[in-house]
Structures are given as C-alpha cells and as structure tokens.
Length: 344
Image (cartoon, rainbow, N blue to C red; front, top):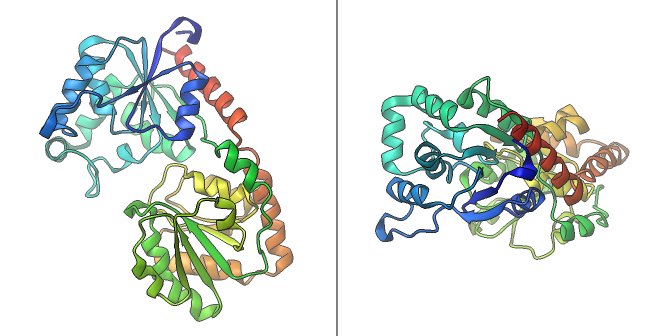
C-alpha cells in the first residue's frame, strides 16, 4: 500500500494531542470510535459491536490505543479495511491481568479462553503496528505474531510547552523532586509518596511536589510532600526541581518524562515505563524497579550527587529532550506509517 493512494482514518477515544499530530501528518480523518450512542449499553462490548459495523469506509484504520481496538476488529472482520494499531497504552500488556480495564463480558471471555484467543484474534485482525516505544513494541509482538510489521514512533512535547520548557533554569542544587501525572493507579504516584519517609531518613530536607489534578490531599500528610494539583504552566512545576520522578507501574512512553528532560531536569524512571530507554541514555542509575523501596533508593542516590554531577546529567537530559519536538516526531511517525503500509 502507498499512503498517497489510500484513505486513512484514526479511530480515537479522545485523541492525545501528539496522536492528533500523527493523524494530521498522514492525512487521516479523526473518527470517534463510539460516536453512536446505545444509551445504557454505551461503553459495553455490544456498543463496540454496533459502532464497528457502522464506521464509514476507509482503506486503513489507525486505531488509537486498545479501547477502540475491539470495535475496529469487528469492522475488519465484517466489512474489510486494514488495521494499523497505534500502541500507545498498556491495554494489550494488561489484557488478562487483574487490573485489565474492559467490559465485564470481555473480561469473562479473556478469562475463559486466555492468551491463545487474544493472540489468534490479534494475528488475524491487526495488520500492522506503530508503537510509541521499544517497550510497547516488545509486549505487542507476541500478540500480533512474528509476521506483522511493527515500527516505532515516539510522541512529542506540545509546541507551546516545548518552547517554554526550553527556557527553564531548574534549581539543581536543591533537594526537590517533582512528579507530574494524572491520579491513575498505573502512574504509581502512591508508591512514590509511600517511598518519601525513607527518602527523608537519608535526606532530611528532601521535598516532593506532586503536580496534576485529582491526587488525594492526604498525600500532603506525608512529611516533605506537597500536593500542588493542577499547574497551568509546566515551567513553574519544573523550575524548583532538581529531579523528576516517573514512578509508573506500567506506562508506554509518558510525555511527562520528555517534558522534564526538555526543562533540563534529570528523570528517575521505573523499568515499567517506556521512557526507561531515555533515562538509561542519561545514566543507568536513573532506572529503578517500580517499588517504593527502589524509588526511595534511586531518589537518595541522586540527591547524594554533587552539583557538578547533577549539572552534567541535566545537560544530557536537556540535549535528549530537545529531540522530541513536534515537527521531527510527526515526520518520524509518517515515515514509520509508510513503512508499515509498504508491507500490507
């Protein structure tokens, strides 16, 4: 297939700004995967089936994440069209796990038939994959099989934030860490808060700023932890910090890590985050296991570095963060998508 000769749609749930940029880069129309409401059945497998049968005709459907995938597969098996899965969440990683987010009927089917069913459907129905990280490509490969083309295209920092973060002069001589996340379990902020008493035992003046709306105010009951909530300007969140922490249990390629790097704040990242590949390039010690104990040890090890060492790591982080601008990343997505199409 050739991009210039096919009609492309992106089936989305609420497109991430970077994914919207990806769609624009390949001329894809945005199509809400659950545009047809079924009242009390909305959000169920039945609604996915109904929506999948009524999507407008396109040659290729880019499927943004795992939630629209079920409906897209219905469309694929009943009316044709190629599916290119944009692996940007942990749905396939968590499928069959206890924390899998899905309809109860779908959960029961997965529980009954297990991984073989998932892989059989994936290998027949998913024609290609663009993964947002090497990590995402790794856990998707067993589902789609060895013959399905997989390419990697990283997301980007939004242009306005990219420019503002480039001007940040972080307080690298402080013992302040910041985390920026939504209040979702997989983001692991609770583990980082649980780790903070251990951090304070070794570094008594250590502070943690929790940025993002919806986090429990009770986090602030932990000595040294401040819940800042939603912050309009991310530059204000990163400016007081010497360290950014990405404590995710599992996260395909969180843009917050890239934002910290762009601001010149070294990131401490868990092995469960796809941005571990970036943190390792800065320093191997900046990747730790997703446990309170490992997070505490990683934070303490960083705070024990002298200013010259912190500045060295910050310089590497800023240089790598500069690579995640919109223009270069959308061009890279277009190239990756075209390589997938060429194999279909």
